[in-house]
Structures are given as structure tokens and as C-alpha cells.
Length: 357
Image (cartoon, rainbow, N blue to C red; front, top):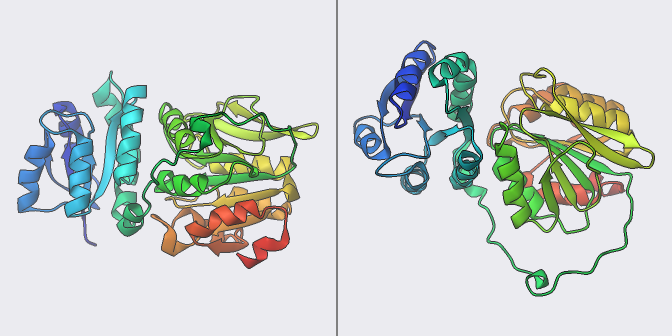
């Protein structure tokens, strides 16, 4: 089997040493080198090109974002961002994901060596997922230019409040940040309420929600316990916590809880989908999107068995066709559709129009 050639680019000698030695223990990975910054990395890459680059974002001489954009313009290569677990690092990482990075691994500011040793499986999984990523899909999912509306001059009046029994639950992982951006920016201001799990660490989900809120007509926010699921709002599960939907009279609200990782993730798509199956049943739509692994497959099956409509993103439009594939194996997916048709399916929730998607 061909080994995955990996280059580690990080200004921390500890990161370079630990990752270089631990990743090399996996028989599927070959660490072809390490570099303290993108300038040194470019010199090494002239001799041997990697399959995957593990890239820091804050480095001397050239920052990771500049290097990433240059790389994607000249010779697209799978990139896993290695970012500090801080709010500042999260905001910068959002720029990297928008520029074409496949996924994120995080590193703390303290006890770095031990953390990296303890997180070897996560790092290896991210690298293997990146090696299988459909880079053409990563690079064709481009964020739209911000469009100003009359709100820039005069805020809209307060609309009459209305309630809805419909809930859209979405789960995504690798490639999901770009895919979700494409879906949510296409939705009009009045649309069914959405609850979303995107596999991300803490801080990163807040930065992701903040970015989307500035691009979308709908409200996008990181979920807090007690938030209502209402039309025109998307709630994103916070990193490191599970999100559940509960019924409160005629209303749906979310709860945000701790607990162990489920399907190797926290937040877990399986947890969200199960809660929606119990709380909303036939009044829900479940959508499983691009991502590695099987989180969400069993939960989507429960949603379908409860009477909910269920959709999977098709292979051609996925960055990584893992989660939808596993859901399809369980007969959890009613229909697979391309990414571009998901916004229309969301708007048709509650009508027979889904059959035509």
C-alpha cells in the first residue's frame, strides 16, 4: 500500500519533533520532513512533494494563510491546519478553511508535548482523511462575496412572531465548513429552524458561527442551553459539548450538555439526530453531509424510523464521502442529492416537493 507522504510545517521545535516521531510510527504514513516556516518548507517541497501538509498558521517570515493561498493557486495539496486552541487561533483558522484547508487539529499553549502524544490517533485520523479528500470539491466551494442589503442603511422592522413545528438537523465533518457555508448562505431570511453539528473543537465553533452570521441572511449562532429553534435561525453545537433538541410545549429548544464522546466525537451528530427523532419525528428533516467516519449514521436511521425525511449528500459533491456512505449502508438515507440542491430541500420541508429533488 502506498504510504501517505507528510510534511510538518510549524515554528515550534517541540511540535516538529513530536509529530515527526509519532506520525512515523504509523505504517501508512511517511514523514518526508519538517520545516520551521513556509520558506523552508518550499525548499523541501522542490525535492519531494508531500501528499498532506500539517501546517501552523502563525509563523515567522511567511504566515500559514499566505502560504496556503499560494499553494492552492499553484499546486493544490491536502492541508491539515495545526492551530492553537484559542479564540484568536480559531478566527485565523476560519480563514484557512475558507482558503482550502481540509481540516483542523488543535494544540494547547501549555503541556504541548504531552498533548500531542495523547492526541496521536486524532492527528493520524485527520491526516488519513485529508489524503482521501476530494480537493476539487474543496476548491470549488468558494465563499460568496458579501452582499449588502437595505439593512446597511435602514434596519428592517420587527416581523410578527410565528411558530413552526419543523426542524432541520444537519451533521457534517471534514469539508463541512465550506459545504455548510454554501448551504446556509443560499437560504432566505424565512426558512425552517436549523440545528447543526459540525465536528470542531471549542472556540472554533464560535468563530465559525460568527463568520457565517456575517455572510447569511439568516441568524447563525453558537448554541446555548435554552435557545429556541425558530424560523430563520441556525444553531451550531459548541465544540466540546453535545447539543440536543427538546420539546417545550409547542416550541423546540436546545440543551447543551457535557458527557463522553459519542461515535468518537463531542459534539456528536448521532446525539443530535436521536434527540430530533424523539422530539420532532415526522416534523423533521435530517441531512448528513461530507465527513470522515460514521458519526450520524445510526442517528439518521432513528430519524427515518420516526417518520422524518432523511437526505445524504452525494459522493460527487462531498469532500470526503464517509458519513453519508455509512448512513446509506444502514438504509438511513431516503435519497442522496448534490450539495447545490440541499437549500431547496430545506425550504421544501413539510411539502411533497422533496420527492422532486
